[in-house]
Amino acid sequence: MILNIALYASLRERVGKSHISMEISDPATGAKLLDELFIQYPSIKPLAAVILISINQEYADRHQCYSNKIP
Image (cartoon, rainbow, N blue to C red; front, side, top):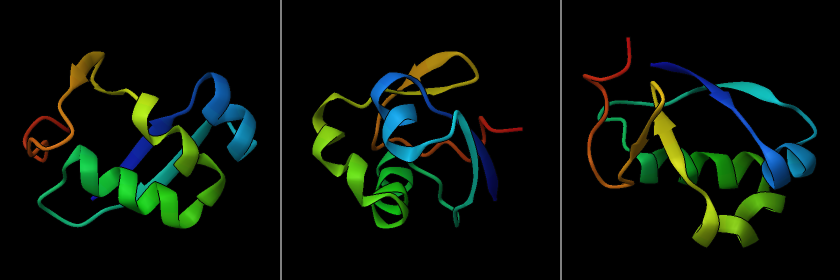
């Protein structure tokens, strides 16, 4: 599954982009997404505790499966 990810504030500054695309395997969870982001962008790992995830403009729990919420 390809995710289109918008980055804001400190994440945008550390990654150097406001939007990225990332492929993630099912089941897609917030925790899996973050793990992949930390591999590709290790500079954001120190922000792990304060990163919020939103799917379709709703805040998301890191451990819930979101494959069915992503069009």
